[in-house]
Image: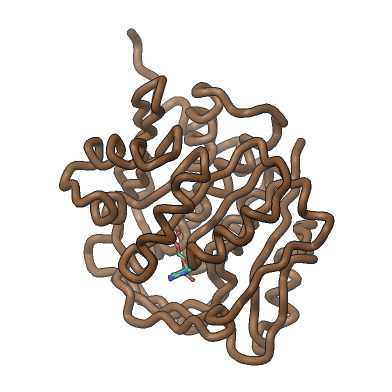
Length: 304
Ligand code: AMP
C-alpha cells in the first residue's frame, strides 16, 4: 500500500440546491478527496487554511489518520466558495470564489512527502499543482483535476500541468470548455493529445467515460440515487476512491485497474450526493461501502 499525496482546496462552502441550503460548511477538493481515499489507503495532504479553520474541522481528517504535516495555517480567512445548482444537478454554478489565504500560498512539501508514489493534484491553481509535482522525487502515478475558474484564468499553466500527469479527471462541461469540443468523446480524444495517457470524464448522474491512449474506451453508469441532496464534492470523492483504490497496489496501474478504480470511485461518490457537504461520505464504513458495491455489481451485470 502506498501513501497518496493530495494537494487541493480546504474550504468553507456556501451551497444552495433545489432542496435546501448551507452556509460555510466544510468542503474543498482536498477534504472530500481525503475522506474518501482514507477509507482505502493512507493519505498526505498539502493545502492551506486560514486562522478561522476550526480545530473540529481539522480533526475530521486527523481522526482518519490523514497526514496533515503539509497543511499550513495562515493569518486570514480560509478559501470560500459559494455556488448553487438549479434543476440540473450535474453542473454547479459559481456565485463567488474568495481565494483568501490561497491567493499567495506557496506550497513547500515536508521532507517526508518527497517519496510519495501516487500524487493527485486536485482542483486548485495550476501554478500550485506544478509546484507540488516538482517536489515529488519519483512518482509512480500522477493525476489532476481542474475547473472552469482555472480554465478561464490560468489556461496556459493548466496546459503545462496536463503534460506532466498520467491521468486527467474532469467534469464533462469543463472538458468541453477546455477543448472547445461539443461532444464528450471528442473532447476526451483531444485531451489525450494534450498530454495524459488517460482521461476520465465525469458526467454526474450519467456516470463516467474513461478514455485510454492505447486501450480505448470504458463507460460506467453512476450508482443510481433517487434523491440527490447536494452534488458538491462528488467529483473529488470519485477521485479519492479512484486513487485510494489504485494506491493499494504499488505498481503502475493497468487499464483493468483504472476500470476497477472508476467503479470504486463512482460507488463512493454516490454517498456524497445524499447529504450536504461531507456529512454522508463521513458516515461511510467498510461495511456500507462493501454492501453498496455488491448492489452496484448486480445493477451492472449483463449477459454476453
Ligand atoms: P466538485 O467535486 O467538483 O463538486 O468540487 C467541489 C469543491 O470544489 C467544493 O468543496 C469547493 O470548495 C471546491 N472549489 C470550488 N471552486 C474552487 C476553485 N476555484 N479552486 C479550488 N477549489 C474549488
